[in-house]
Amino acid sequence: MAIETTVTRKRQLDENFAGTVSEVFVALSLTLAFRRWSSATESYFGFLPAPGARYRHHVGSVLRVGRVVEIIRPVAVTLKEILHDPPCRVGITMRWRVDPVAQGCAVRLHAEYRLNHAAVLRARHWDRRLLLHFRNQFAFVDRNLRRLRDSEPTTRTAAASSGLMHD
Image (tube, rainbow, N blue to C red):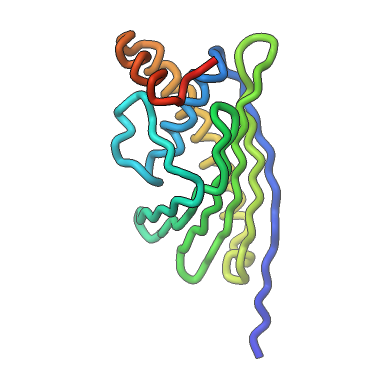
């Protein structure tokens, strides 16, 4: 009789960005789209699928399978993902939230991840790998925010008309 062992861990990270809630939310949506549901992340107005939408992406030995749980424009996105890297399996729930602060916005990430038995044996590896991934996501939000600001005004107008930007 096999006993399945899982371990759940939580991580909370946040970072401040200069910009409006709408601008930061567009940058976040572009960041989340990469290697999830859209390969067209070069379009600055972003793309968010409807809640319940599923996605798959394979990079190296890791298969990412996920779904969009919740989208509250322009403040929050919740994703559930499973990373399959045989024999390891890591289930992740990520809740991204954009909150206004005194100067700009704070992007907050509440992540909860579950490691299966094989992943528990490599827990330190997964902790480091996921922390690096989360920090990179914040760096990409910053990059996308700068690219959005440097883009032509017509691109900003397209973002506004897409429903992603509204203050």
